[in-house]
Amino acid sequence: MRNEATRGFGFLENFLLRRRASLADKLIPSELRQGCLLDIGCGSQPLFLSRINFKTKYGLDPNVASSASVDGLEIIKAEFNGQVLPFADNFFQTITMLAVVEHLLPEQVAGLFQEIWRSLAVGGRLILTTPAPHSQKILDLMAGLRLVSREEIAEHKKYYSLKELAELCQEAGFKQTEIATGYFELGFNQWLSAVK
Image (cartoon, rainbow, N blue to C red):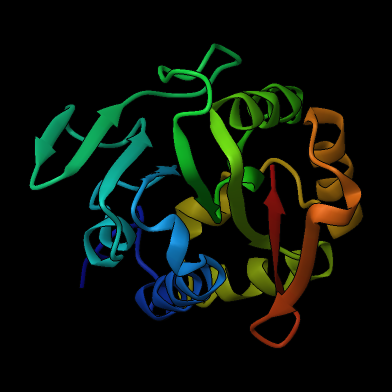
């Protein structure tokens, strides 16, 4: 059985994807939904974007077949390698990165957070999820048992603590008082929400 939105096979992949998407959806206030949403790392089949209620939606991912625009959803084939995101300043009300930051080279992450800050409108929100550092051994075991995708887990570059993520946000321009964090899925995953 092929996973809907991730590479490789994992018996729990779709379940975990839906859990991340549900959490992110709950963290987005209704007043932001009349604007634009960007999902960085939306996947080859952007299920989160196709199911979330937002006026205008964009997805950015290197694994989509090609750039396309359908029914208010624009998917852009692109990879973040330190370059400027292809959007104007203050363009988005919400930017999400669900299980993405751990796949990026650490030297690219600070630049991406700066680009997120630039692209968010005042009052806009960044929402991200990522595995907690203490979950690495569990994820390796789960990948060996084919409960999660071996391909996805093997590609993890760095497991970030919530403190490290909050510091990256602050370095990009977010105020400490506007950053909220927490854990989900029995503490093995974590979330961050930061308001510009």
